[in-house]
Amino acid sequence: MSLIAIIDDDPDIIEASTLVLSSKGHKVISANNLEDGFSLVKDRNPELIILDVMMDEPDDGFFLAQRLRREGVKTPILMYTSVSKTIGFEYGAGEMVPVDEFVEKPISPDQLSEKVANLLRKNTEGK
Image 1: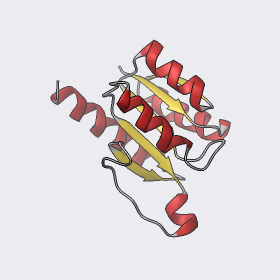
Image 2: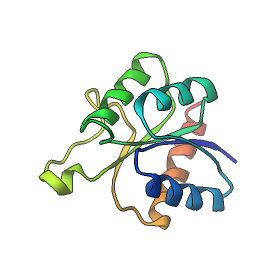
Image 3: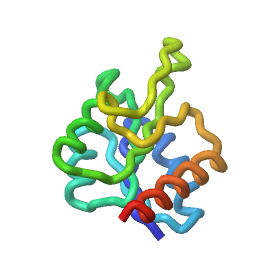
Image 4: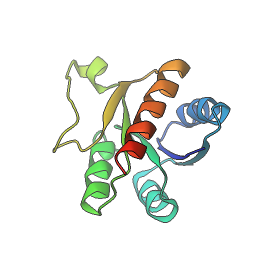
């Protein structure tokens, strides 16, 4: 089906997400830091990127999303976050955070499958 990149420093999140997405027929590739994630996206050109907000630094995911957009990567980005639960701050996609959608961790397998299917469909319709 689709090639999906997961960029997250938590191996349990990568493993769980990979299991869910693989069961739906997707091929999953992953990286656990900013630089490897950037290279993975540029080299492999996935159809969807799943990106964690906090990795080595609290804003790594935001920084990588902005860098990808500056480099012309238009691939949809689904951002995993637990920030709003932790600090009570809600934010949305936009210019400052150039992602297509946010989801709170933990995410259920059904919710992940639905979000991924919706973003892939929108991406296909937009071409």
